[in-house]
Length: 125
Image (tube, rainbow, N blue to C red; front, top):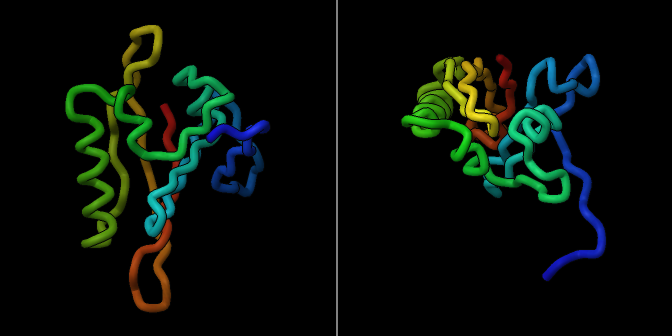
């Protein structure tokens, strides 16, 4: 079922306001629903069509070669289960074939029961 209009993408807020493609990308993950959000940085850098809303962490998989996506998932798991810092470098393949190194950082939010409910962070070159 399609809708007549596109919902606006919600991105994690920053104190400095919206970021540009030259700054850092902001991302978020609702751990209960599995919905992800990505700032415009990702749409511009990965040349994602603006009319297609990316709502899954798996949407990053094609841009992360050679086990990089699996490394991201393992780092997220360690952060959520063992509360280790989410801070790693990944290789990313841009649509023009260039390979970049992305610095990924994130922080989980926990509910009163100590369960992680949201994860958000940044990616930058």
